[in-house]
Image (tube, rainbow over all chains, first blue to last red; front, side):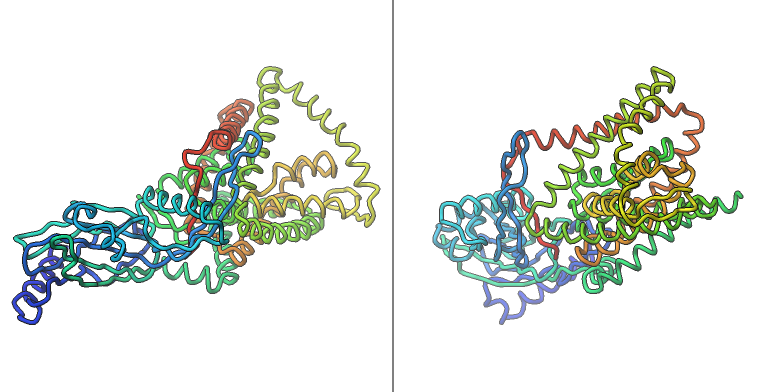
Length: 249
Length: 311
């Protein structure tokens, strides 16, 4: 990790010395372009390291790939609470992190926040089946509330550390249950209530090792996988139970 | 020690899952019941999606039943003709159950159905075990036998029905003659339970075989285990094929834990009084049922819940 960070700093420093880069208001270098989910994956901490050519505030937006969610509403059936109506929520990113050097609402007016997609509950989502506006609003609010409670949508106004108005580091804390796919990192430089610089990066989250193999087998060759694995389970149970018995007979 | 489960798509504590397997194995080693009906609720309490808990439960049962079935086969305790007819029924029931599970998943009702079935099942098992073990502890077994006799008498009309049904067959290994329709229906009922609840169904199969089908106790356990092995195996394959819901890591850890627990339970069981052990199991089963009822009756902290599509 320390070596990787040193490389990142060197890369950023080299970019700053390059006149063509120096004209750009912002440079961002994600620490890695790939996050691998394997059997011992329990979340990951990434660093986004960047440079800016002068004072200002920063906002970093991390957007995960789109994900379909099913929302259900509890309903009372006699004395019991059971799952009642359900809807599908489509088009929303699986993850939305907003990091900033100060509360975003104090940095940008609402119109600018909406323009750059900096409102946690401002993401356009589709509710299926189509409902009347009032009913759809309840579901939409519930969706954002649950996403925020589960830690997939959040804003952190102290996550970016700036060094001498030139270099900055942001810690991106990825949870254990991540949607695989492309994640976009968008960095905005803000001065006097306006976005004056803008740059993007990305990293890819993918299954790796045994995890990837099992996932592909279980979904692309599900019957073969089921047969093979059930036989394996039976063999394991047999070996653990019957073989010690045979030795003692 | 965390492990990422590829199909459940969540982190679990390996030690906790081994402990679940061991506790259930320990109980089955101590009192001789399968204990599959405890694994699925425990997994659901941990946050494993109900369909993954149920399907992985079936795979785990297939794993743990294989060794015991082999031992019964070696001892000649299996009525293969009866086992085969039961299996035809349970495969048909299990297959229908897997597609029923798929339909329930699609409508978003699978979790509700599983929890309700478990409350009823665990309530019935827990109460009947509690009554039986309390009688055994306080009346030294006499009342237990009387109770069994009363149960047998009350089921005699079922026996009469089985005798009058068509397609009468002889089962030499069990020394009985009966219609094949009875075992087919019994197998189908147990197969559906395996698909919807991840249980082996021994708790239904064994009393019905003894009291209704009048099979000798010696072949009942072996034959029901034979049926259980191939039913849970078929349901495991079908759940993986149709619903992609068998988590291999979870199943393997559970098998390991339950084999360890069963061995320990069998050793401990030889030294401890059986009636008191059954009382303990009855209380555990009732505690799980009560916890499930509490979650159903208590108002939820949030009226909404979210599940993410598999990715």
